[in-house]
Length: 92
Image (cartoon, rainbow, N blue to C red):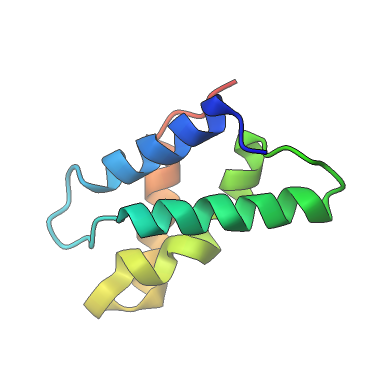
């Protein structure tokens, strides 16, 4: 399950990607759904039936780097994804 606080965190990440740099390809709703699915899988592998904000942080770069990088490539997307995670406050 994805608690409301984690869903709001995903939404915040999507919104933050739409602020600032004009070179960055903003994250779509589909990117948020991909984050949620990957986080569910990660939580399952960790033996939990619920997703925690830390799960999002662990998988986000791998899930969204190619989306953020766009024409600049995955490596640049990884850098932007890491920056996005730093800019977005993590719920407690």
